[in-house]
Length: 357
Image (tube, rainbow, N blue to C red; front, side, top):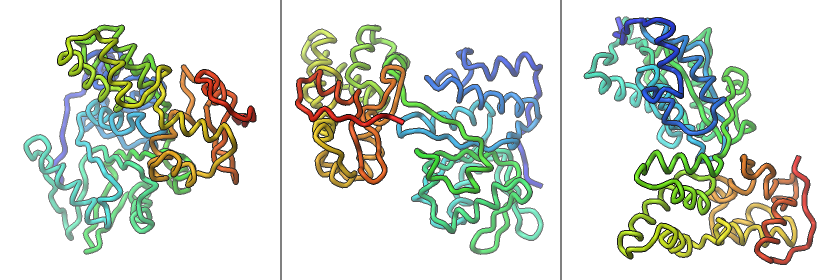
């Protein structure tokens, strides 16, 4: 019989505290922003922690949001709250079901000193112990893999079969998938996974992320870093690291260090990269298809959609309307908010804006 981790079930009050994002000892407290998303996962965790094996298979979740909204981080923290193994799956590494099983096997064998090492039951069948399996960019999986996962994530089936005929019982798995666009989800996934939207970070949230990572930085410094890197945590943290080095090497103020790094990274005084300004400038003349816009931005189309355009097409607390929208058949179009960004920089345009839907 497959070993499982068993836990002492605490009182409801203790469980509530352990899933409370405001509790500094709760893993969820390390996640910034998207409080509604965290609350929904916390409810699922509350139910799971009431069970001796922390089984969390009542619901499967689909985290939907732009790149750099912390989908992987949130899934990992959910597993940490549950105290269960976390299996992170990247589509490019899964060419067949055997690859997925090998990945799960490696995680189980190395978890808790091998206490849940996978053991075959009768007829070479495996029953997976409670765990969280997270599949990033699920829309990039091959059709063949998706067909196998449809059985694995069907509550009345919960079974995978490897190419060599090994049967894997997945009834104890908490599946979490992630995608940048709900429209990219396979229909069956869309209906059986609870959708949790994730929004891009506000500047204030970026300040908090920087402060958590580098507590030695004062609030004004974090605010300045967020000004130059308003939405993307990865960019903000990289900027902060470099600014700290510049300050130390040049014995200058934080403002001088930040301005130096911003200048070297081609970020203007309003906090936007020259690459994105170039995109807005081009769209201020006429709509442009994605492939042409990628050439203007000097990047690949996939990079354009996944990273470069994200702060322009998304809304945040600081930016209630997108600067750019995608118009079917016409490519990308600038909005009134986008034109205002050009006006700030005294860049000429044709004055024609698209209306956000």
